[in-house]
Image (tube, rainbow, N blue to C red):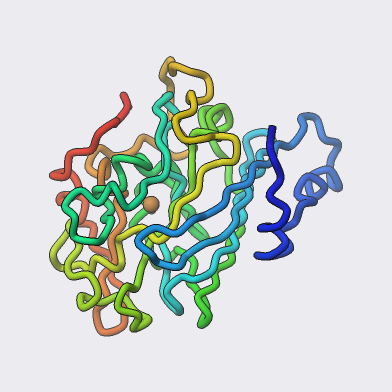
Length: 272
Ligand SMILES: [Cu+2]
């Protein structure tokens, strides 16, 4: 049921198709590793695209991302969005630009891709709280390419609903000056002190096999805890909780974004 997109894979990178071997080499495999491919497609005409692989070995999730076309030399916050509660989120498109300003902002997009479930940081915490931790998010290189790999423990809910989650990378550069500033897209709807470029989504991809409109894995959820991490803070709901400020070349986190986020009422927020 997982149709391999070998062409894209090959074109983008030699993504280890041998993921399963890494675990098997060191210990007898008790449970089969499951691997899912995600094709990241651009949002906001960012030019961002890529391929990701999610590999589950028990409750260990390995996330590999190879993307390109991102804002060079800038950190790109990235998350697994969606729900493990049975809600069927998917990736947005330009038609979700509700205010018609030409930018699909985070609030608009969150109606489609849901809240952060896991923050794909390079180190440290991976809860939704770390959605703000741009200092622990991967940087695109000078060519706008980004490579990421991390293995992290996840809850059984994530294991059971892995197909209901999807990857979003943030950070766009519509005016093409290779940095996050206010000239390209103005202020973030989340906080007027933030450039929209820093918070808007650059690309999104759903797990292969989890087609738009598909029934969420497991159907109606019965509840329970979420990821290793975490309840998604209500304040973050609807805002993806990510914010960056380009100040004198330094990105500064603004936790106050949560307050702004709280004001942006999301849809589809599951029982937490
Ligand atoms: Cu996100």
